[in-house]
Image 1 (spheres, one colour):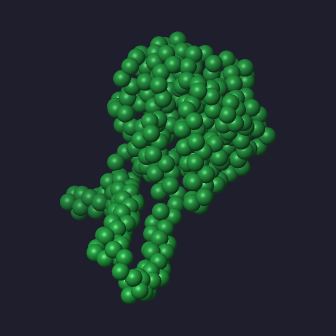
Image 2 (tube, rainbow, N blue to C red):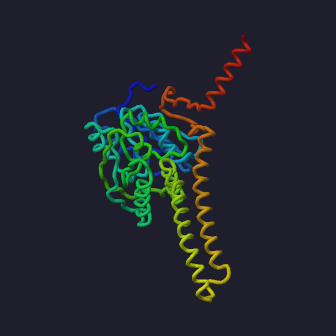
Image 3 (tube, rainbow, N blue to C red):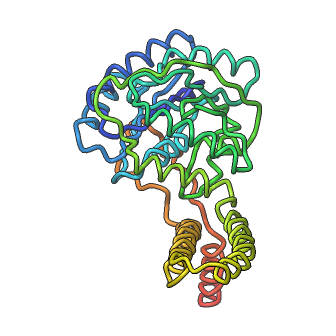
Length: 343
């Protein structure tokens, strides 16, 4: 039974991080004990296939402040972060990855800013060591592109490594959308925010879990979750193409009358234009499909995650059941039917 409500909750999603977890715990323990306040470390096992879960269990047995959530399967990094936030109890919640690229010692600076009155303190990557130029360039491009086309201000060069006040955590937890982008959601809820800079180190062990495909999916979640610009851009391109067509038509007529060059004969020009238009059409179908797929995810109203086991977490911390309007109407109708049958 957990008697004390901690001041700080540290949330670490884990997916195949064997070899990093004991060192992660040691560094977090040293930092948090140095703050002189009570704390808990919530590790979320996101369907690991190595010995990560066994290492997590060993840490829990060694220190009951290490609390575990074991997913029934892999649900993804952002969902694992969400589960940790759902079960957190601290007045401030710190999100940190388990790969040790984000230094736990930076938590001291975050806590200092929090005590100064900031509700969100995010870590800004001043330099990224051990990462390829391609990954650094695409990351910078993603943040700047997202900021330019969304209606929220996501701090540049930041990840999920951040401290959030309990009020911010409660606000983000109330957003139960399935395609989650935590750093965007944190910016969307508002509150007083600031950043602290650090140098991001290479991984201590293992390989990155964010492949190019996963990075692209996260970018799509961020853009489609906070912007209608991809849908709106279709009308702008259509307008440009229409103007070009209107301008090109008289030019082509004049050239056909004034010259006998072979490039104006046949269907080559027509086919080229049709191929370009078809490419744009398929692109817009893809964009529309992304939004429709996300609508489908929300309409199905499946739970964000399924938990196999928890260790060291009280049952009353199970997140409240989220009921959609359709489910509420069905349950209301069912209750009325039962009342009528028993009367």
